[in-house]
Image (tube, rainbow, N blue to C red; front, side, top):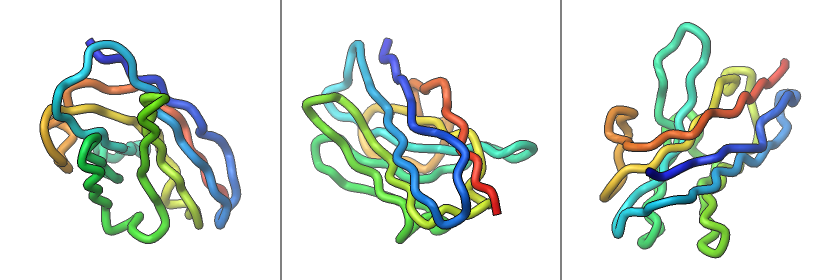
Length: 123
């Protein structure tokens, strides 16, 4: 199985920035995408951003477009989520995930998940 380890969450003020990291290990697919999702208390898990590893295609949720950036480091087998201009509405547990083939915005389309990291944005 693929193992994903997330880090970088924390407590910040509105307007601040955070960078989340997700390090992947284990068996990999020949073609795959990595995504970031978040889940706030009482709400369903929602799509944030995704990236195709080899082609570097990206997709963003409308709520984070222009503020968040997904990127990767091939040497470290790590995907990042740079979060700028954070808002209280961004407060959630953030998860990274991997799926075979291309981009998808559905949580059910992903095969492996990290443990999640808490992001809390105060007003």
